[in-house]
Length: 226
Length: 198
Image 1 (cartoon, each protein chain N blue to C red):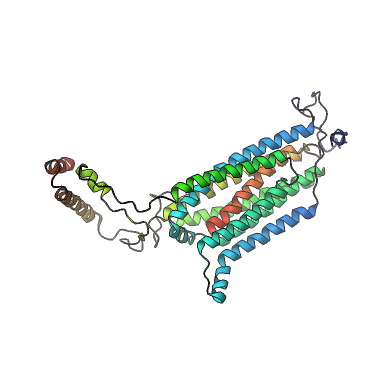
Image 2: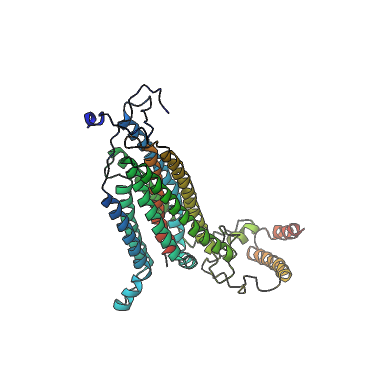
């Protein structure tokens, strides 16, 4: 394996900027693996961050099951399903962008990364319509701000506080993920990524898949409880 | 960029996976999404129509979480490359799940075993104002919010009248409390009432 890895890689210098391994690493593989392990440790903290909200969800749902049935009535599962499809598609384009970077396909990488950004903004547009619809109805996070005029349970604000916290934190992650993808798109357009060095694309990809992973659980937990 | 680096150029050899893997996993995720929507929205009606069996929310959430776990495993193993990755990264991810499960187990061991309707602890030696607080029956959460509201969310009855009523009621409650604890602090209770109002 190591003898295979030390083989010199020919870089098309008209397209790509050749990159050397940083001083403090033995070789490129060690550099890549260290980056990836650091990223996984960060993703672990992200899982535990969302974990707190998932625990709050389970605690309040087991205490007030009828509130969840009533609250989910105000959510449109079709919008949630569309967003699930969008995020899955964006995960596929992101994973394919990494693959094209591995294959020295600069144009393909940039196009697939742009497609991912486009799908992510599609997710945000659907979320915008969902949020504004709820604000229009008078559904805001927090007990004092719950001004929904129709018939509802007296503690329905608990459901929507958790809904806003979970989806809001997720939307923040979508925004940070988009910023990351735009950053690697610009670098990919400059030809900084090729088969031997695509670490930032891989790391942003891992982050983006985590965003998809969280939504995979949020969708049935929030939209499909009735 | 790093032209003056004395180290070797990057010689990392990527593990390129076939296109079919990406589209296969993406297709699988879409199919499982359709399945989870169907099991949550349409399957209970179909089952009830043919077998008269009801899918309880507990069964529904177990089915939904089972499907979501398969989807999450697909994303982790293939898109996040954990299947082909270093074992240490897999261990990192699994340790996250382990600590998350501890978080769930210890929290739920508390919240699921609490006495949901605690009997208020009122003792004869307690000060009168504490008695009325702890002795107050807890407001049940299942009371629909529209009780006492019209369809536009406004409280039924004028606001000024309500405030006046409220003052009267507290005064009455205070008197009542004094009667209940007649052997203790009868005098004190009467002293406190007017002081609080002024």
